[in-house]
Image (cartoon, rainbow, N blue to C red; front, side):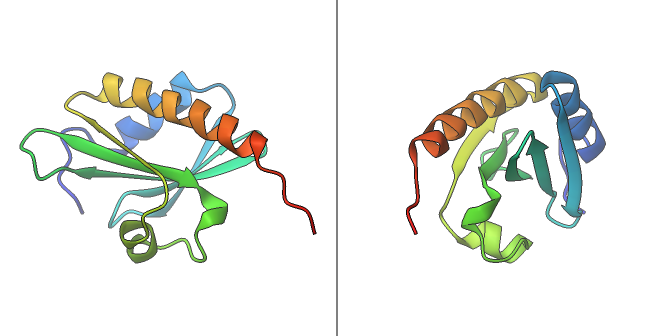
Amino acid sequence: MIDLSFNLEEFIKSIEESIKDAKIRIIDRECNLLALVIGEDVYLVQCRPCKVKGYMYVKIAPAHVYHRWSCEVVEYLPYGFYIFSKQLNELIDKLINKINTLRKLMSRISIEV
């Protein structure tokens, strides 16, 4: 288990309280990997302590960019946004901002088959 300045359940509860209709599934507790579902959009979210003392970081990316939902894949593939903060409420605010950015980016992408 990873030592966070807040526990995973607090992080999840804050997301659910801050984002309407958010549903969260824990993928792996060892690396705090979550699947966050908002409407039809699915994101992978990972929360970890940063090497800079006192900071936490969150990585968020659309789930479809990963070929497998695992700690190793999410940690080593460079896709997504990183968020850094010392406080949970600031982390959540920045997470919401990045989700809005990802939604805008994904709405502009059209794939023709």
